[in-house]
Amino acid sequence: MVIIYSGRSRLRAAVAVLTAAAAIAVPGAAQAASADAGVRLAAAGVEDDGAGCAVPGLPDAGSLPTVSRLPDPFTKLDGTRVTARSDWRCRRQEIRKLAEKFVYGEKPPKPSSVTGTVTSSGITVNVSHNGRSASFSAGVQLPTGGGSGPFPAVVVLGGLGADTATIRAAGAAVISYDPLAVGREGTPRTNKQGAFYTLYGATSGTGILAAWAWGVSRIIDVIEQSGGSILRADATGVTGCSRYGKGAFVTGAFDQRIALTMPVESGSGGVAALRAIPGESGAQPLSSAYSEQPWLGDAFGSFTGGPGRLPVDTHEVVGMIAPRGLFIMDNPHIDWLAARSASVAALGGAEIYKALGAGGNLTYWSDVQDGTHCATRSEWRTPMQQYIQKFLLNTGASTGTMRIAASKSGNLAEWRDWTTPALGDPTSDTSPPTAPSGLAASATTSTGTTLTWTAATDDTGVTGYDVLRAPGASGGTFAQAGTSATTSFSDTGLTPGTTYRYQVRARDAAGNISPVSNTAQVTTQPGSTTGGCTAVPTVQTQWATGYVIQPLTVTNTGSSAMTGWTVTFTLPAGHTLTGSWNGAVTIAGQTVTVRNAAHNGALAPGAATATFGFQATRPNGDTAYPSGYRCS
Image (tube, rainbow, N blue to C red):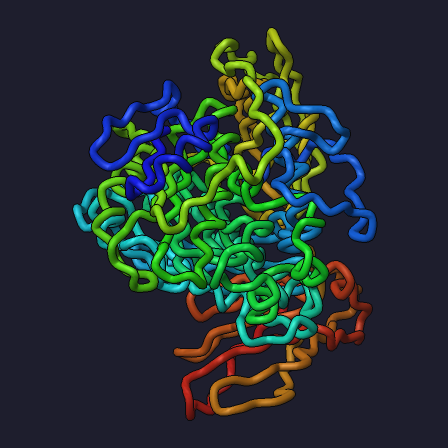
C-alpha cells in the first residue's frame, strides 16, 4: 500500500504515521508497493460467513467506559487478541454485532421467501416473512462494450455514486437501485416506511442505512437464483455518494458477497471515524446526522454527544469489508463531509487489511481538485477501472493507495494506542478438505427439505460447509443457498411442486474450498389444497394514486376442511403492489399469487379468513382495481 499526502507541508505528519503504511510518498516521489499489493481475495460467496460464530454477551450501553482513542480491532470481546488470520472471521462477527447494537440497528438475515426475476433491463424482488410481503425493483444497464454475459454488476444507490460511464466501459453492468423504496427518508423513527419496515415493523430500531443494505442483499439473492445467464452473483459491487455513500459503505460491510465497495463523500454516519468528528472543524455533528434522517439505528441517539463510549468505530467497519475490495472516494473541499475523520478511519482500517495480507485491496483518495459535491472526477477514473478489473473481472492487479489531501489528513498515531499484529500467512495451508459425501435429502415438504451428508476431512480441520442449490433437474447455475457448521442443513421458502438440485462443499480455516459433493435432487410436494374456495376483495381506502384492499376474504366453499389456499389475481397495467400482510406473495408480470401464512391456511367447511390484505399504487386518475380473483 502506498500513502501519498498532497502538499509538501504534510511531510512531517506523514512520517508520524509511518507505521500505518507500507510506503510514504509526496507528489513526484517514487511509489513503493507493499508485498501484498497484488493479493486478490474473492467475496465470500455467502452474506455472512461468521453467522455460526459464538459471540460472547455484548456490553450494555450503561456500562460502557469512555475511550477517547479508536478501539483495538484485534482485541476480542473476551480480552484476548487475534493471533492468526483465521481468527478474523469470528472477530469480524463480534464487530458486526457491536455495530448493529450500537450504531446501525440489526440487519436481519435472508427472509423466509425471496423470489424475483432478472432481465437485461431490470430486476424484480419479492420478499415474504412471518406472513408479511413486500416488493421492489431495480433497473439494469449492461456494459457498453457488449458481449454475451453473464456480466459483473455494480449496484448504484439512488442514482448517485461512482461514474457509471466508467463502470460500464470497464465491462460491468449497472444496477440502478432506489433505496427509498426499501427505507424511506422523511419518516419519524416511530413510523418508518418502506419494504424493509413492511416486513419488520414501522417501529423497528434498525436505521434506514441498514435497511438499504438489506435491500441490496435481496437483489443479490435474486441474481443467485436467476441461473446466472445475465448477471454474475459472485462479482457484485456497490457504490453511492453522500447519503447513498453512507448506504454503500454499510452495504459492503454487511454482505460478504459484495466483491467491491465504493463509497463516495459519505460524511458523518459514513466512513468518517465517529470519535474524530466532534474535533473536526465544520464537520456535520453526530447529532445532526442522527436527526436529519433515520439513517442510523435508534440506539445511536444516546452516543451523539459522547462517541467515546462506543465500543466500536468505523475503522472496524472498514475492517468488516476486508479483505475484499474497497475504494473510498472523498472530498476535502467541503468541511461538512468530515474528510479528515474519514482519513483516520481509512488509515485505521488499513491496518486490518495489512494484517490480513490484503493491503493492496484498499484505496482511499481525497486528493482531488474539483470541490463540487458528488462530481465525476478524472483522478478517480483509472484506479476505479483497475479495481473493477481486479475484483469484478478477475484480471490485472492494482496497488492500494492512500491519496490524502493535505488539508484533511488525519494522523493515526493520535488515535490509537494499539499495535498491528503479525498474523499467520493463510497460504501456509494450501490443502483443501476432501469432498463431502453421501449428500441426501429427506423430510421434503411443499416448501422445504432437510439435507444431510458425511463429513469432509482436512489436515487442519473443517470449519464449515457451503450449501449450493440449482433450479430444475438439469441446467441452471448452482448458487449459495446457505452455510452450515454441521453436516445437516434445512432449506426453506421453496416453491411447491418444484425440482431443485443440491451440492455441498467444505472449507477450512485457511479458506481452502473442497470439491463439491455428489448431487442430490428433490421435488417439493404440491401445495396442499382440498375442496373449493372463493376470494372476495374489499376496498378499505383509496386515493388518486393508490388503494388498500383489506380484507381479501377467503372462504372454504367445499365440504371438507382446507389445510391451505392459493389466490391469484391480475393487477391492471401500471399498477404496482407495494406491500401485503398475512400471506406469501409472488409476482410474475401483472399476475399476483398469494399463498396462505402459517396461521390462516386451515379453514373448516364454510369458514373464512379475512386476514390477508395488500396495498398498491396506480397512475394518477386511474380508477381501476385488480380483477380475476381465483382461489384454489
